[in-house]
Image 1 (spheres, rainbow, N blue to C red):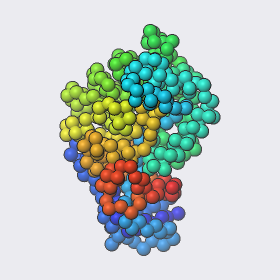
Image 2: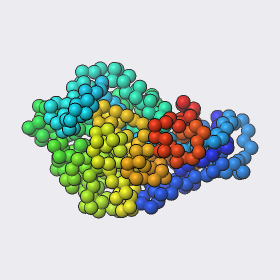
Image 3: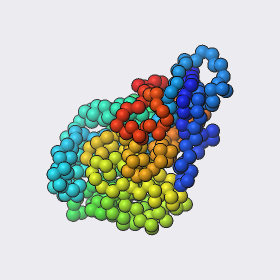
Image 4: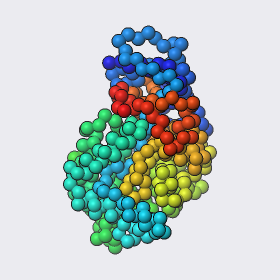
Length: 412
């Protein structure tokens, strides 16, 4: 089956040669073709170019994209889509003046979600999660990473990862699973951190590996949660199961966690609302992708990741949603891109690069998605008629997506 998109106003993120990521000044350039065509065959990108060079393909389904922008689907490299219920009351509590830390200390936050998850059946959890995944795909996300971390028990974590595995099996988009047993300390281990880490290492990890349930390992490396030493212990134990780290770090404080993550070949370090000069130095010349989560900063009113400091230091940067019930109950990557431009002073080119090619690197799928490159999956967004791609972040509250194409099939 062949599909030919013609008269595309702007075809974005065109990469003749596949690349893994863009860094520093490279992020300011978003390669595009005006008045373009795109050929999709057998679910993959087969050809593209200017309309004046468009071959006369026979037996093609023709799609006239006059006035429309076509770009790779968003890649969301950091989500917690699998969860039970909601934390609406905590939203109101924050409005009434309670901080994230105060809510957590009263038994809210992650422990609240863990209680609900462990009371929810695997079938119900899958159905709740499926609805969220359907929604984010309709909003233009064509690859997603999903974390566990609301079980905090052996069975709870396995339940979450089995749901993620089922989503992988039933959806056409790339999905990566991350084991985040080190999300918070359960109440019974509040004063015995070492015993909970023993549980993660000696019971959770072997069972997860036996069922092949995870691609990556994560930990909430933060003051009041998991220390640098504790996180290092989990990362090192995960290595023998082939789990590369993707770590929550520097959300509230900088405690030299980034340096340790880089030394242990972390694929990404995520949040980075607080970034020191030492952190920047640690990331220089590394293979670790910094990931910003601007809609989390928006929702709980904390500082935004200093994108300009990171990019101007010559580093790459990716964007993701942090979709979760407590601090970011939204998986809308369009809003993330707009917020990065509005609040983090990223240019539209930088933001789109961060949400496509760099985000694909941050979840280990840059060989299949993230750019318009021959042989990659035909996962693309077709906008409504717009003036230019600058309109995407400019009209931050509007739905400018007309169609989402997944593996060459029109999903929306």
